[in-house]
Image 1: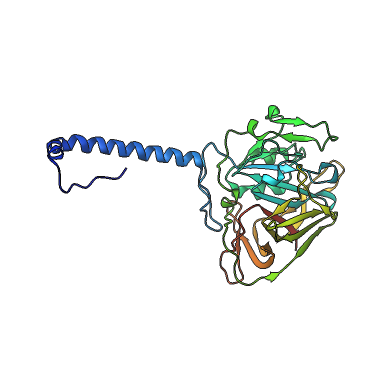
Image 2: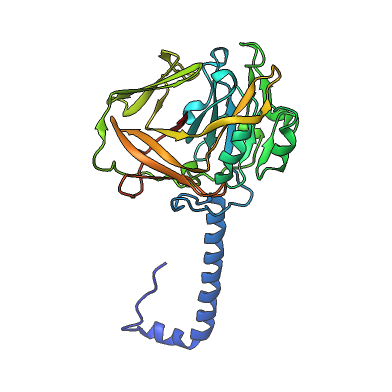
Length: 332
């Protein structure tokens, strides 16, 4: 509400002048109420999008970024809800296969899955998202106490049975799904990218025009082909279109190939295969795909609590195209 001018008072206004102190007191009280309401609204909305590169976002009490561990072998496709994630991480697991960690904050779909087991890599990766909720089907027995001690809200089916269900259209273990609205009360409502220090903006100068790019794991292959019509990198998986449950081919506005150290962990699966551990704290090179162009970049994450800063070769912040971001961890 704008204050009226005090100049040129009318007779009525001059008569009201004697009530100045009372009126000032009422105005002050109203201002305090407005300020209190503004703080309350701000807390509900959860602003995390202004985090500086490598900085730490302000925690939002009662709100959590939702991270879901998603299956990615043939019988698990097509996945549900993957196209609604803010960020999709791809990491290598046992036998050279891949698994997905999808993060939801600005929008949460009604169903996500199929949900699979967590890995040690997830715990360090998720530290930059300020105590997120991690939905997963389970984990190796020795890893469970490590997950319990991690600074996150662990949400396996035995902790929230009403939030999970088994689909009848595919065989176990590729048929476990999450209903997020039954798992958490709220999410921050802002893009999860802000928690990790990622920012959106116009493309930087330079870069190399690129029509397609392929990432190969020992037993998995991801393809990214630029579509000018959709303004996205359309995804293929093992040589075939990577589709959402709706049938539409998945696409990402930005794809980040982050070159990292992948080493053996101290954990194994039930068949004795070692679980790879992807180091997400440190520094290294990256390749950023956006707007039909590939940009060389560097990444740095000083501590587990820090976000990941991506920079251009001249040291400036690397901006990403608005929309979904895929971050693929590739062994260097």
